[in-house]
Image (cartoon, rainbow, N blue to C red):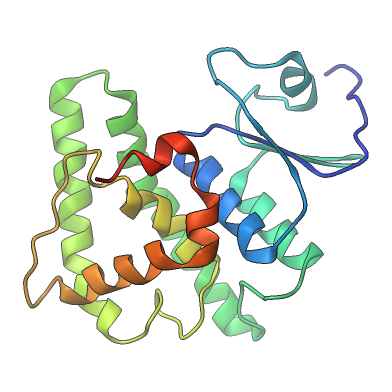
Length: 210
């Protein structure tokens, strides 16, 4: 990597269409962080991003001499750097459980979103969309237990899940309104009305849902 140009304020390089970039934008909005948000086309990566990250990928967060280039690391860093409101539980057991839920989302659902977004193979996209929908329908009843994902409070887990749920309509995935899915649909409505979520949306993302 080359020499990174120092900036006086925190800078977030974000892909306005990407769900990984979106989750960090939600955290920034939730925390009320003053940040220079730079919308980047991943097909035309600025030299600055190429120099500061070893993988030439988005999102990327620059905070003075610190460079972060993995979304979950960014989210936890922001939660510790700006502790109010806290987005992870205080107690170690609950905190570990939240991290496991984030890991599950990363392993089970995020790859399916990536396949759909890549749109390289029609059969693969259809298969991924079906798996994503089936997975969400399976867990739908658990949202009746707590207002947020397995929690009474909004957490980083919700920040990871909200961008995926927001994109369902664009993916052609319809969650039918049934007794089983009602808790999930209510959870989605709760997330999408949250001030930080609305603030996090890019112009492109606003057009994803009619």
